[in-house]
Length: 117
Image 1 (cartoon, rainbow, N blue to C red):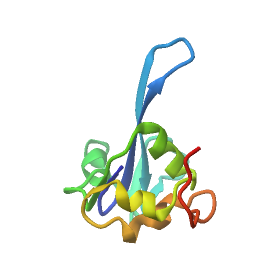
Image 2 (cartoon, rainbow, N blue to C red):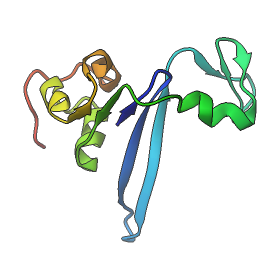
Image 3 (cartoon, rainbow, N blue to C red):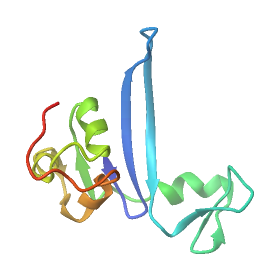
Image 4 (cartoon, helix red, strand yellow):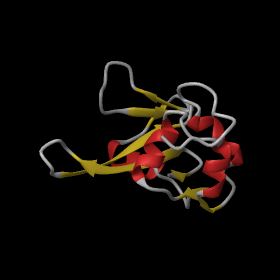
């Protein structure tokens, strides 16, 4: 996981059923970003449309505020609120994950105890 001022980026890697490697990033933007009405490609930030050639720079802004490293399965489970705050803290490599714990509570509150399934 990589946290910046504007986004949280989750790198997901694995294998598809046929055995081929698959990798993609899930980017969760903060509330200042919206899709431009009627578009699947254009974004606006704080009501101002972002030129397409500047979207990546706007979304994936400066250096990450926090870096969390864990196996892909663990990060995927963390995204579904299946890992505790203590587990997320233990995976933090740089920065402070505390202000971003709510980003992991997408499907409910984080468990109070560590989970290992």
